[in-house]
Image (cartoon, rainbow, N blue to C red):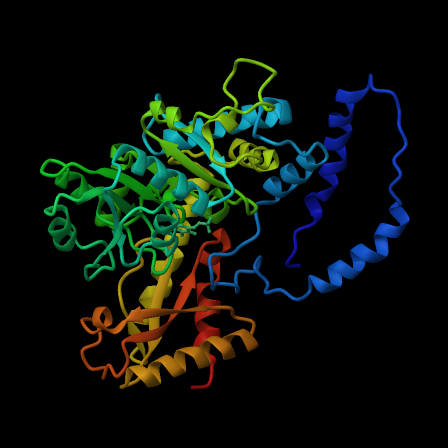
Length: 447
Ligand SMILES: *Cc1c(COP(=O)(O)O)cnc(C)c1O
């Protein structure tokens, strides 16, 4: 079975417990026609057959996987109330849960005491809030991020009308310190976006070296670890990535997406600020929202108004089962995904018919099938991606710049500016046991 259903029974018991809250309310009859729902829902289920098997370990393509069953059940349970974490009136329990998970995530990044943060609908919104605050603090100054940073940074800065520049990458696909310093020397840079775990290849920018540049230049550091943030818990990464993750506490703001590597349903990002006083920038007058108490309403420190309280309930419940401890099961599973990526990388590196690039810094592997010309290699990558799917192996492709690949593949004739390569995100705990199967299917494909 690809879809886990054994846990569904727990839901009815939970709803019984929740119903007790309302025992003093008079009965009322719902007008909903439950009989009419069934055929329509079954029709929907038929439509939902048009999907890739994201839950299966042979889905090893994009950053996609279903949430942990406990997150799914907690989210569904919350939907019977449908709390809105904009204000305490909209969801008292779920707002409290949000505050608690944010404290634990901040602690993971090295901020045990002071910080300000909340959940968002995702990484894009979380980064938007961080760059918006950066602009309030350094008005008119430029924001920079590496050329491998998430594409939304350049778009967010367009929306916010903030000047934006891209920084070149080094041989490991990380932000180039040489190019960054060149740009810092102009004196126009206000914020450096440091990506810990790039979306394309999982590269980890050298945060430790970027921090050293703060001795000479005055700039803010925003960490975008929407994808890679939980690797802060990993103890098996190579030294450069370990050194970068060790210093997250030095940043001014941090983004992590629980809906990427944190086992959550979509709609769950998180933004954290080191300085709680940035809350003053969020101040607004709302004539209708806050009446229940003087306690902090999360809508007072968030750009979004309505937010899914169910997301906070799901994350709180998941973190109760899998706390963010360095030696805990969650950390072990994060580490196993890196190990799975290393195992796949080693197979590629030892195969004369494959072109390897760099060791995975997190859990994403990029490579290409051997060909003498870049254009042929791109074509073959696309073909292997298509035929792999026909054999139930779901990989991904990525466009990488020829200028960067040339160092690694001296014998390839680069007749294109960018090359289509193979890409695999090994983000499931189960992947460690499936690398051989993934490899065997891939190697059996006709070329
Ligand atoms: C996914 C991702 C984002 C965007 O987050 P969404 O949750 O998709 O909006 C931003 N930065 C990085 C590094 C990411 O991997």
